[in-house]
Image (cartoon, rainbow, N blue to C red; front, top):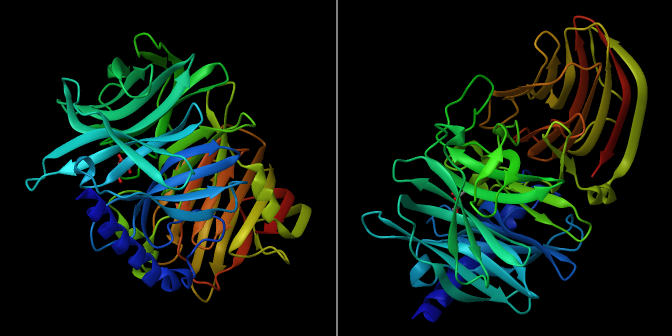
Length: 489
Ligand code: FRU
């Protein structure tokens, strides 16, 4: 039965991929160096791992979006995290324990066997949910064999919103974090352990009541060591906006501390947002053979499809660029674009020491829509300065990055960023005489790394194709553009 169902579902998926591929590839908003689904819907990165020298990245995938909501796992691999090869669908929701989707999960190397742990999602006609943590293995890195559920029941006190297992090994023991919710509707992360990756035992709540009232559900936890600390990433849902914090529909953030593997309890500092932009969710990390902790996230958000203009063209959503995580001395996560992206650089243009005073300028050769731009500012006596990208006077379009000295706030304003998007996102920066902005533009995306990755803004934008100008501006004084470097990618 399930074999037939798998075949039927795969035929449907592959038909949609074939039928829509041309339409999708002809869309101007299609990105040039980011991972996207071949067609249809993409959300969380899943099963991110380096295995036998290749990076594998799967993703939540609905090839027939928006016709139904059934979730498969799409699959890519890469030798360099820049060029990705599309592989056949990794998981198809064909079994009794995953009738409503193969939900998010992770990959691990089980003594040489590439193994997935994911959540089988089941809903009955009344919308009642069942959830199963399931294993799948592959011999060839392409075809996966499902081993079925290894956790079928939720511990007492938690609901069936119980998903997104992230597995790792420490001192010969397997550990796994799962995102869940208590029966009183508070978000939680649970730690499990296992000696064989099949039989799992609950250790305890990793981060529980320490954060107080902090949302009704926590999705997609990821727990890893960085330096001499443990870092927990998770996605609290239901946290109220507070000034410039927590302005997206759901949040993505982290705490840093020490995990007690015996009790599961993590002593930790404050919750911090991972990203300050409009579109960032479900980050997943892996460690590679260079010892780098690499993170990729979904550059999108759930339940807001109408914000993403490409949905008109049979696809929706993309990933962020891969970023290396480091921890600063004050225990903040620092995000750095992976070095491998430098191999895409072309058409280098550079300028130095251009002082602008109450004016807006453009520079010959500095423009474009698939661009990397690094600008170092030396702050003089000034009220506000910044960069405008994807500008066109005729189209009345611009996306504005500005730094306001009165309140030390950096802002990303997409009121004029094109189809369907608007609003502003902000964060505070420490007092400093310098500001470094490192920007990646890719057709319909913008990723801004501030001061070498202390803050990052990730966002989708939808300007017209010919909105390509880049401008530098100073208001109420002067600023020195000490160094400007630009490449087409
Ligand atoms: C996060 C999430 C996960 C779930 C998956 C379903 O975006 O809701 O919790 O496993 O997406 O697609």
